[in-house]
Amino acid sequence: MRYKGPLPKRFTDRFNAWMVGLRSSPRWGRRVSGRLTVVTYTGRRSGRTFSTPVAYQRAADVVTIAVAMPERKLWWRNFTGEGWPISLDLDGSGRSGHAVADVDGKGRVTISVRLDHPPAASSR
Image (cartoon, rainbow, N blue to C red):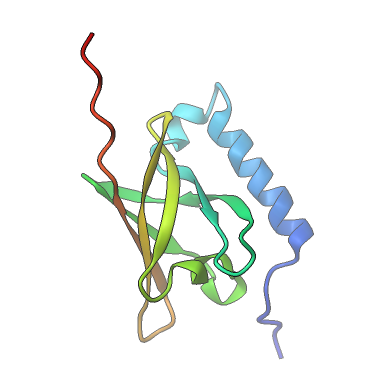
């Protein structure tokens, strides 16, 4: 029988650090930053702040995140039900929004983030 629990923390920490490094590298950063972002959220139960790199697609003010191997990950569960606030690093700046997770009949998880409107630039 195959193990279906969460991935070992040691593995995920190293992988996430590598992905964040790749995203900020001078050589590869521009190529991957259009598909890879870092999401930051506060855990519903723990109250702790977490950041994790994820692949995304964006259409105007909606960002879609397809969670790979959702049965092995726990972070997306913060966004079930009515959803939860989230922040994303998009185009070199932080954007906030409201994320809602959807689980389909086959167990695939998609998170839809409706971005808040950025503050208007002040005219001086």
